[in-house]
Length: 270
Image 1 (cartoon, rainbow, N blue to C red):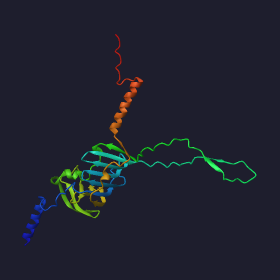
Image 2: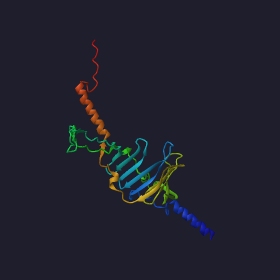
Image 3: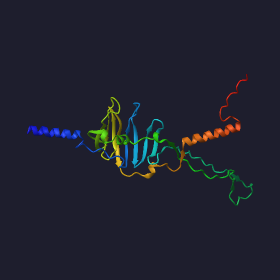
Image 4: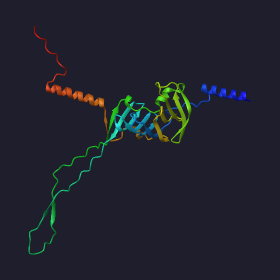
């Protein structure tokens, strides 16, 4: 009986080592969701709240970023179009002053006036102007490489052949498996991620530091308006702006007589 038990244990270990009986690697990119959690500060500061929306190739991230501070980024992988959205503060209301009035006082008489005093309004001196379209924010175009990548991108690229499960996990009421690369990403670095079967990353650890941990998750289709530039936002393309500035400078140089390119100094006469 003891030999049979040992043989069973050895057989189970062999199957697990070959990947037979191990959990299936997650299926990424097939689930739409809204996930909220905390992201660690790479410089050792306090963790910040982060909200991520995913729907197919589209993503929206609301987080504190090193370059932009508190920002919202919308990104569509299918078009590689990414924008940083910043809402502008609403303009302070302007007080409306009614036009002045000039009272007309009747001359005194011996008898009581038969009519009440009247007032004559002074006509306004300004010409009404049609209000301009209100700008409620700006959307700055950023390069694809500068857009935040989905949490699952690295693990999807790693693939089942290069990752192994090291146990079960539960985060924010969701169950998953802990996965780690078969080869360490760098000497002395151990990285693990708690990932659901449908490919949602619930937690990422690097050694003893938790880089990301979800606090809530809602699956389901997300509103299309979350991933676009809102109405009333002014689109800004930094490259186009830089090109326009360059063209304006060339035009200014032509007016002032400045040379477009530095001219070589004349050769000395022998």
